[in-house]
Image (cartoon, rainbow, N blue to C red; front, side, top):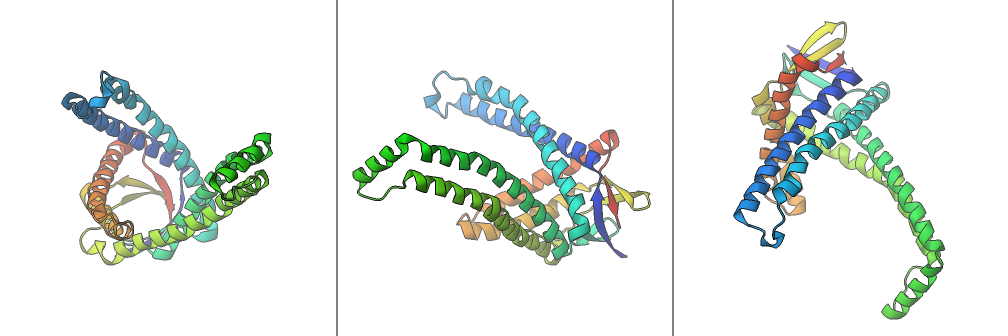
Length: 294
């Protein structure tokens, strides 16, 4: 029986805690893989320019500490604010809808999925653009007021025979760059994000579900409050990997990297499988993700 569920909200603490722990462990796994690769490079002497520098102890071992910690704390920030934005936007834009047949996701309604995910991305882009503008605009203004700025541009103009920007023009350029970052960047992220997310849902709905389906096992706690009890590993990893394989075909054609779809399949299959395995292991120990489904 097909049941359409809308994710009305996500509980902040359980989602943030689970995401941070999972990506902290993934950071540790990535650091170990990099350590092994660096050990092979060091032993084989692939880069003779390194001389007596030991890249295993100088770079590899610090990564064992730095990567998991960085992944853990950065995920706390991103997850917390992303979930907060999702909960705030749902009453205005609607939440992500899922068409479920038991625990199988048989369809992802395109508009609801694309709209809210791309809106969250646009808000993040606005925040990043605001921070960059706060750094870049004063820098341009400072350069434009320096007495040496006029002399430098005059000398460059004489040397090149062209017209170099004056101090005032540098200040104006800073304002333009700031406006592009604050206004243009969020708009671009929203538009391209909407297209990308819509393609994700379309590929999943009409192509990938013929081969594999994402599976999410929800359990009702009380009323509309549910928990994500388990994520079946293989079907979910295969479905996600196949979607990104198809997306990789498109981005590969646009970028000229025609092997991108292969790397996408391998990377997203391994990553999704690891996330599902870790979630299933951690959920009984640190608490599952809780969400309101209606």
